[in-house]
Image (cartoon, rainbow, N blue to C red; front, side, top):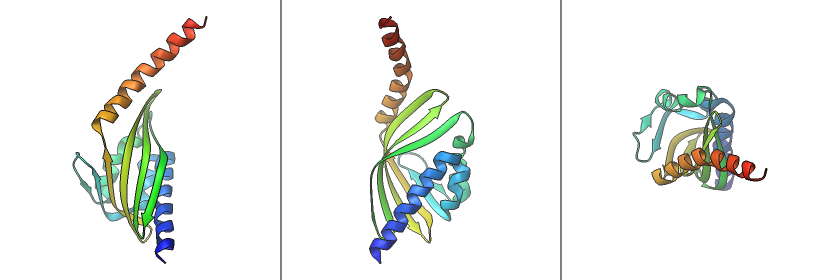
Length: 144
């Protein structure tokens, strides 16, 4: 029974990220419990579905897009741990950074979402996103 619950919890977390990638905060809403607690460690904690959706609302504004690449995922009963690379794209600017997430799932809904990330890695992602297009143009010019 524990293995089945673990697989279900993983499915919920994966479906949550797929929906958030596809439809932003609106897509994420069905996967959130009414009393969810969302913490991006080092930032203020959001408590309750409405507060979490407000925090995610930037994903609903064009030209902002979110996507995630799963690196590793594991679960024990209703707790899911996921290592991933998140990408926040604003127009053609793509900022990628490492995130480790802890999720608790109950009755098919996420009750706890705690993300850990490194501000240095986020800053590096911004620098790479800004410099990468310039280096691509320089390489293309040098091939002429």
